[in-house]
Image 1 (spheres, rainbow, N blue to C red):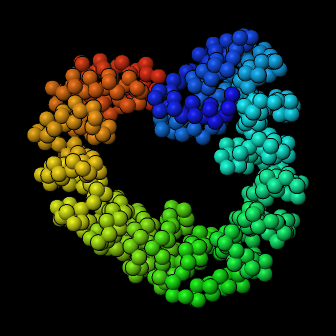
Image 2 (tube, rainbow, N blue to C red):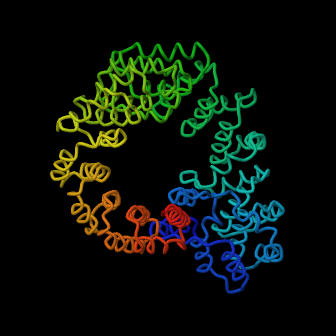
Image 3 (tube, helix red, strand yellow):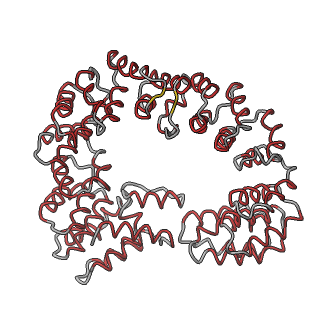
Length: 553
C-alpha cells in the first residue's frame, strides 16, 4: 500500500463526507483486525473511518479537523493503551506475519503514546520490507518523540522524499541536543542526502563554535549544487564574519540569492556595510538584493529596505509578502512604513505594503489609508479598505457612501466596512450593483451579503429565488437564508428545510447556515428539523444544533 495513495484517499473522502467514529466503535474494529483475514481493503477502511484517531500527526488530518472546527490531540488513543483489549493483543498485531496487521499496530502504538514498544519499533525499521509499513513504523517513532535520532536520521535518508516530506517536520521536533549530535556524526557522509539533512538539522539546533566551523567548512568546500543548503543554515543561525567566504559567491547565480540573505542576517558590521554598498552602484536595484533586506531578521535592515523603496527604482516584477516578516508590523517600524507608503511610486509595492497598516487606528495611518481609497490602482484601493476594517474613525464612515456610489473607486472590500459600521441605508445602491453583476461574481456575492445583513421586505422574493437555484454560489445561498431569517419570514420555512435536506446529503457541515436561519424563524417545523441534527456524525454540527435549541425561547 502506497503512502501517497492513503493520503489522497483521506483527502478525497473529506471533500465528500468524512465519517467520524467514537472510541467504542474503534474498539469493535480493533477486535476485527485480529482476524487472520485482515487485508489491505480492511486497513484502508480503517484509515478512512478513523483519521483523527490513527493519523493525528498527518497534515491532512489536521487540516480536515481544523476546517470542521475540531480539536485534535497528539495521542487520541492514549487511554486505549491501558485497556485489556490493547494490552492483550497489540503484540499479536505487532509480531504478526500479516503485513497489514503490523502496519495497523504501528498506527495504534503511535497514537496511544506507548513508549514501551519503542525498541520493537526500532527493530521493525530494520526488518520491514514494504514501503508503507516502513513509513508508518517511522511515523510512530517520530510521534513518540524517540530519542534515537541517529537511527531515525538513517531511516529518513533512505525512505523520505525530501521534495514531498511528511516525516521531516516531525523529525525536527525531536530533542535538539540529540539531533545536533546526530548531525555532527553524519555531515561528512558520502551520501548526499545525508549531508544535506545533517546541515539542515544544524539550522534548527542553535549556534556554537563547533556548529559554525562545520557549516562554514561546508560553504567553502561542498559542491555548488548543494552548497546552498549550508548557506541556508548560515542564514538561519545569523552567523557573522562572512565577507571573505561569501563575497565570491555573489557572482554565482545558483547561490547568489541565499548568500545575500545570509549576509543580511549577519551581525557583523563589515558584512552589513559591504551589503549596503552594493545598493549604491545603480539607480535601480535588483530583486534579490532588495529582497535580502526585507527578509532579514535585523530590524535595521527592514528600515533600510523601506528607505530603498522610496529612493530606488524597483522592477515591475519585484514581489514580496508582508506576512512573511512579522517585524514589519512592529511599532518601531510604523513611522518608516508610513513614510515609504507616502513617497513610494510603485503601485505593486504600495498594494502589498499597505497591508502592514492593518489594525492601525492612529491618525497618520488612517489618513494614509483614506487617501488610498481613491488611488488609481484597484489593488491599492482594495487592500486599503481591508486594512481599515475595525477602524471606527468617523472620517472613514462618512466617506463610504460616496465611494460605493462611485463606479471608479468602489471595491468589494468596502462592503465589510459598511456592515461592521452598521450603515444600513444603501440598499438601493447594492440592488443596482447586484442587478449589473451578472459577470462579476465578487460583486454579486458582496451585494447580496450587504442586502441580507440589512434586508427589506421587498427582498424576500430575491432571497427565495437564490435559494431555489441550486446553481447559485453556496455562500450567496447561505446569505440568502440568513436574510430570510432576519426578516422572520415564516413562509420560507419549508424552502429552508428542503435546501437543508438537500445539502446534508453530501455533508451535515453544509447545512449549518440553514440551521441558523431556521432558528431565527422559530416554529415547530423549524425546531423539528434542527433536532434531526442532534445525532449528526459531525461534532461541530451536533453542538450547533444543541446550542440553537437551548436558546430557542
